[in-house]
Amino acid sequence: MVSDDLGRTAREAPFVRVPFWMLWLPITYRQAQALGLVYTSQYDEGEFRMSLREAGRILNIDRANLRRDLHKLMQLGFLKRESNGNSRPATYLVDVVACMVEARRNGFEDTSADGETLGGE
Image (cartoon, rainbow, N blue to C red; front, side, top):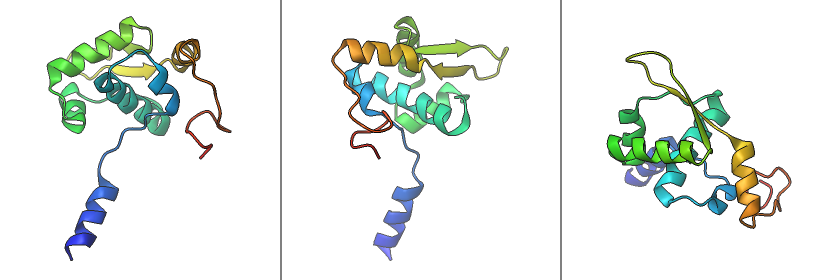
């Protein structure tokens, strides 16, 4: 049945975790999606290590724009990059402390039990 296939496709689709506090950062929507993708990988697997081409495909962003967004996030101090050598994807990590300091500076107040989602889920 079509609705069953659509439901399964929706459940199995890649997703990006954008915690509520990210909305208080001085970044664009696209940068928030890129930061969220790194944060999701870091939260689930411990680190983000994916080619820019694959990450761009997930976010529907071309590789050049994704590279610019990641560079901007590093300049702002929200992201750290570690090289893994030539021809290997770099490792990116979200600096959660720097993000939270900036989010609180911009008016974010932790109203949830765990600080991750609105409503304490």
